[in-house]
Length: 223
Ligand SMILES: NC(=O)c1ccc[n+]([C@@H]2O[C@H](COP(=O)([O-])OP(=O)(O)OC[C@H]3O[C@@H](n4cnc5c(N)ncnc54)[C@H](OP(=O)(O)O)[C@@H]3O)[C@@H](O)[C@H]2O)c1
Image (tube, rainbow, N blue to C red; front, top):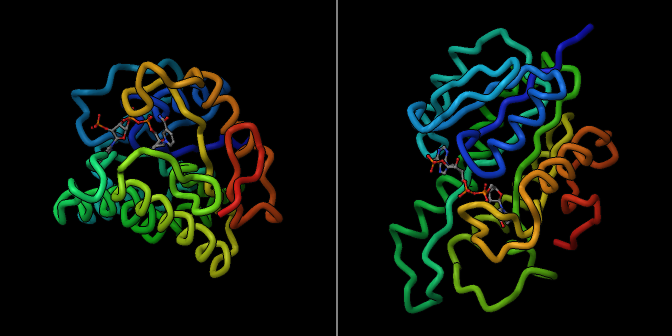
C-alpha cells in the first residue's frame, strides 16, 4: 500500500504540531519541519524531523536537495508570524517585509523547490494555511496588523495563481481562531478540532477545489 507522505512547516508547536501529530497517528509518514530542531519534542509514529527556516531561501533549497527523488503527497505551508498589530502608526518597513518574507514568499519558494517531489506524489496537494484576516470581503476587523493581513491576502492570490498555472491542487485554508500562541487564550477553536477540520478538507480535496479558499469546516470564504 502507498504510504502517504506529508511535509509540514512550523511543526514544532501550535497548529503545525497538531497536524503532524494527527497525520502521524493516522499512519502517514510525516516530514515535520521547524527552524530550531531543539524546539521540537518527539511525536509518535513515522515522523522525521528536518530543519527548515521558511524565511530563508537557502534553507528551503537545501531541504529540497536533501529530499531529492522523494515523493511528497501533501505540502502544508503552515509556518507564519504575526507583524506589529498597532495599526498604521506602528507600521515599520523591516517588520512588514519580514512578515511577507515568511508568510507569502516562504510558501511560494516551498512550492518552487518541492514541485518535483509533489509531482512524484499521488495526492499532489499544497495546503497554504492562510487566514480570514487576509480576505478583503470577510476579514476586516479592529486588529491593526497590516503586515499579517497583507501577507495572507498575497498568499491567497498566490494560491489562486499557482492553481491557474500548475496541475496540482492548491488550497488556501483558514484554520479558525485557534487556541495557539498566535491565536491567544481567548481563541474559540481547540487546536485538535482545527487540525481535524483542515485534514478533512485536505483529504477530500479534488482538482475541482484547486484555487479555492475554505475554512476548517469546509465553508467557502470569499476572497
Ligand atoms: N491561531 C489562529 O487563530 C490562526 C488564525 C488564522 C490563521 N492562522 C494561521 O495558522 C498557521 C499556524 O498558526 P499557529 O496559530 O499555530 O501559530 P503559532 O502558534 O504562532 O506557531 C507558528 C509556527 O510557525 C513557525 N514559524 C514562524 N516563522 C518561521 C520560519 N521563518 N521558519 C519556520 N517556521 C516558522 C513557528 O516556529 P518557531 O517556534 O520557531 O517560532 C511555529 O512553529 C499560520 O499560518 C497562521 O497564520 C492561525
